[in-house]
Amino acid sequence: MMEVRSFYEQREFPKEEREGKSLSLLSYIGNTPLIQIHQLARSRTGVQIFAKAEWLNPGGSVKDRAGLKIIEDGEKSGQLTNEKIILDSTSGNTGIAYAMIGAIKGYQVILVVPENISEERKKALEAYGVELIFTDPILGSDGALLEAQRIYQEDPTRYFFANQYNNPSNWKAHYETTGVEIIYQTHGRVTHFVAGVGTGGTLMGIGRRLKEFNPEIKLFGVQPDSGFHGIEGLKHMATAIRPGIYDESILDGTLFVKTEEAFEMAGRLAREEGLWVGPSSGAALWASLKLAESIEHGLIVTVFPDGGSRYPEFCSDCEKRKKRLSLKYPRTEVSLPTTSI
Image 1 (spheres, one colour):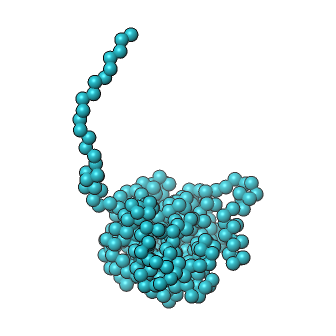
Image 2: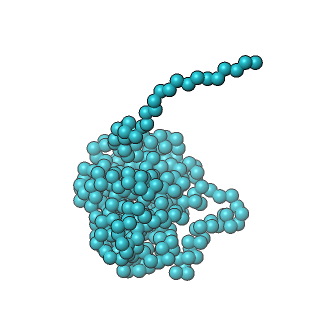
Image 3: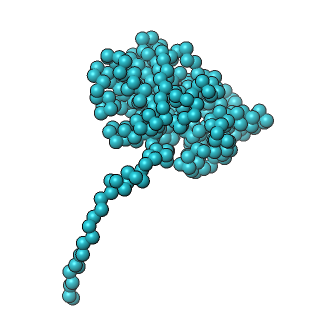
């Protein structure tokens, strides 16, 4: 535990800050709070559920960690130079991380995205000055990945292909930071870890770190229940291009969630826990609660990847709800006092 504590304290107080030097925004990626779920987990006697609040990263999502590691490792290896353009495919969060980091470091960024990404994501990416290439929304993230690969292969000397689905720096970001934070924040008491499967980086990196710390810790992935789903950021592995960094052999199981269940749970998190998060967070909690039903005692940790503000489709019946909750005040005649000067 001494090694973990020392590492965590170094991240909590960046070297630049300890030495009185000016800090970059990048210094504040990571060290997110671990928040206990109270109301929604109250019926699970003997089991505690905690979530990493990853929407509190500077770029608004868990992908800040992987984005920074991928770019910095690219710089260290010499593959990423000032003359090269950062290129990758994304459904939003990783792209925003690249865009933010690229702006700070002075890199041009080109992203291939499905055309149906939300307007909120498009506006964020455009604000950072990113060039967007749109692909067929029916093909989803797989279509964007194939197009990014094609662009890179046409002119590999022009681009640094970040390749988040196959780049080991993705999972190593979580092995080196998020996993260590979870061990420290739970005082080593974590017994189960649950995370959604997109690129697989979060689950693989944290999972490997936790298994090294204690092989008895159980790891569970969360996937949509079909290839046709609406949970942005998650993959149904049976019907998708399998990321090269994903290795299900380290898992103790996979939990499958319906789109409606994920959105409903995200809504409940806002109303009952005060946590306005995205549907992938709803999926992660739904799976954590299902897991909690099957164990008598334990401390489950999951990850809430991003906030609810990036999802305009978050509340499909918001207008109906507004009308139902609105108070209609009776019109009253108000007599204003007259004054004489």
